[in-house]
Image (tube, rainbow, N blue to C red):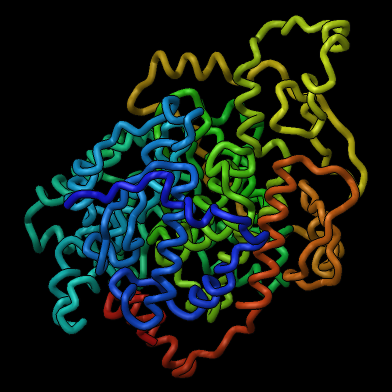
Length: 595
């Protein structure tokens, strides 16, 4: 099958006239999202017209800035939880950028590799490119599937789902070792994962970031998934593997229970199932000035901030390599970081350059979350509000230290004295010098706000020598398939899970100021959904854009979804426990539609 080509003219109809300041369909999107989980095969059924409008709007928004191809996934033929129209971005459609960065991937070959490799990943959620930045593909997927998924899903689900061939992607698999003994065919593993590797290489993906806190997902004593970092045959040794364990969606129940306050909320790393230590190749850690050995003491804000910094530094590196981000199923933690990456790069004016705040918000909610199968209905019923956390968290990444522009400026500066004298600077015309806050000026004095008290600002000069430049150059010259990694094991358990922060829980209305990157809005009242009012102080372009996205999200979310109390299990406590057991052993899918 051939992909359908779409050009920038797709969005011409939407851009004609004067567009409204707010995305008119965002409320309908959130209402549909909170009503049911998206299924590719259900796109033309109940609520199909709404889904079709959402899909069409996404294509229009992509078409504003990119020429792209559409890989058909009608009826979920490739993956039941992926969009019916999978967008493959080829190049930026503006004349300025058209000849700068362009993908070299042939869509027909890409489709063939996708069809051959899809069973290598959990739930059939194959490696899918979703962001194009500087010619690099930022991809998402689920983790690697085990033997049980390869051999057991299609046959079991065919009989127990009324013959629906798509439903195989909903059931957890069983023990890898048991199935290997029963099958006696080890060549299938090599074949399927071999196609997965070929797909990764074809997309020029070099970096694989694994967010799992486990080496293998274990339920009721059985290994149900695997991952690249524990592949016994070392098939993924040629890739740069990063193990950056991040709490699963269950942890965000605690976030909700603490009145949506992430400051001071620390994951319990002493739990038995947590066996994946943080492991990052040494050459990636030099320029970030982060003490990675302390990762188990970070709260949810600091952990998310540091991981985002790491991902941004990878995609903004000098090489042409792409990035894959995945967790277990690829529909909770994965969209969290994909969405943050998209919004951060957009706020810097580096991708989706023509989209307004309400439009980029619609695109990332619809495409990165809804159309890629995030189960918002199920998560809301359990209080696992990772989706709300994503957009409320934007207040913590508005500063320049998260800007890819800052990274580019550092790289462009020579290691020696740049040669500017005071007279040279004074001779510059005012418009050439730019402002101290503008990110788009030709010459800007970049300032950073200190983590001081609310309303007070101090500034420090940006470092002129690019940190780690020699290390990066040496890495590019002497790259090996197994680079030295910085590996931190679990420290000795402390007595307390959470540090004592005096007055932390009580100070709900000023929780944002307790972060090391203060919220640049005054919170009026204690509700997390209170739309913030801007301060009088001048904001950077990046900060303004991200705050507008967050404000638009909070306003629409409060009028549609709201902050919900956790509903009891419809079948009671015992029935809920049985339901959990059925899901864990693979007797039932995790879709809330089965409840």
